[in-house]
Length: 135
Image (tube, rainbow, N blue to C red):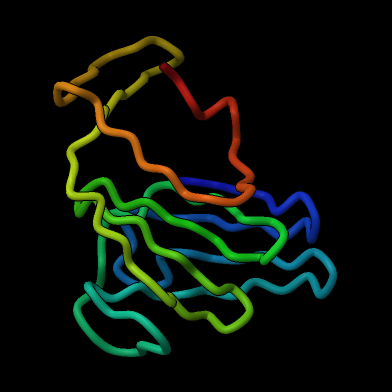
């Protein structure tokens, strides 16, 4: 499960890679409300029906625009999310296979990669949890 905090609005985004609906949830600390957002395979905009997308595992915020970004390692896609409208404006296919490392109780269990390891650049400021990044 991925979690991100917008440092400006203090909103939280949570991603559940195993959920078949409400894969991404947003928590607003001001109103103390939770808004769930369902992602459908290859659907953008105000989609409300379709094939559920599994695997959205990581989230981050672009704090100045209050836009969330989610990464689905199963499809190698990055989704731009608008929490205020509960919409996905865009899907970006990376076209790459990346590094996949798994840890158990803080110990590296498995790590596989492609050669060379691809990178994905998203322009603009983005808030990420530095403790979740390993090299």
